[in-house]
Image (cartoon, rainbow, N blue to C red; front, side):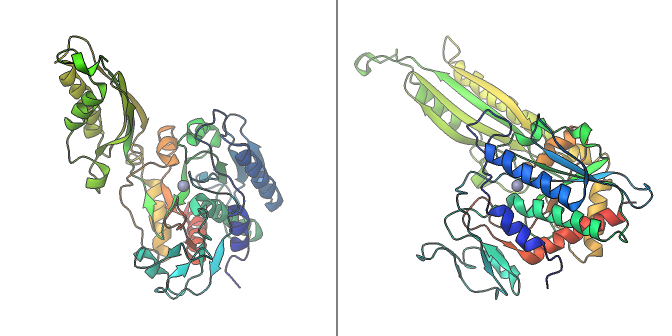
Length: 410
Ligand SMILES: [Zn+2]
């Protein structure tokens, strides 16, 4: 029998429910199916026996409390996971279970042989010899991001309710929508969550512990051209598309996502459209270093000024909007949460894998709302794709880490 015998069936039950968020929507949460799923989680928390179960009407987040049984000596801490899945087909998810994977064979996903998980393509598969893999059938993503986190937190609190001999402080849990469209945490009531610090359980493979993210902004470059007939264009036409090319060429050529790694930042042009008359270039700006991040935002304006200098009117206009910041800035001031997670992993003989994330987490925003929130591994591999998979044993170890953190938090 598995160590946590409800974990697998719980996870399978969750992933079969389509909870894809909707970037086009203006509602919060962005999709009714998220609201419905959150409602079932609230019911499950109630059945398990947690108290103070609430659904925040402003954010959609479901929160609940597991009271302390250690005499109230510990800090109140929280565990957070998101319920929505990424922008990929999530209709009729049919998870497949591969028991005792040998760590080297190809794993066919679709019956027609079109999609196969191959260690030659995904070398991380070699880390899973002897493990139970849960994969897709090739037609959808799996949704281990972040249903594994939801299942792990739920299983951990269920275990604690069933085992009162395990002493722990007060634990708060939160399940929320719309992480994948980057808006869910914006509405999260971090103060109302009532914890000293928290963890998102939303990381990847075993041991991941993240407390450093990018600083992030979006830049929209609007370019005003002057359209005239090509026959009489000389000295008159201003081609907005050409200006867009000139603008892009003035940015540092090497600072692109496909050419950078580690702590190197970038400008990423991810959308451009237009005509001679008008063009729009949309970028994201990323850097772990706050100073360099600010410099990059300034660079985008300086390049615009440079292009504009050749014209009598402002042809290029750049609007920069900050998106989120590197949570390290907050965590550095109080590393209790990170130290605790590291200690818990080490006691469980799990090697903490700490590196700067080339992205953000809900914790980046929540940390800046006053609740330091590093990110723990949840187990998923190849997230956001039909090749997504997770090992049951890694999910069990994530439950272990949650329990160990709760136990060591004194
Ligand atoms: Zn996630």
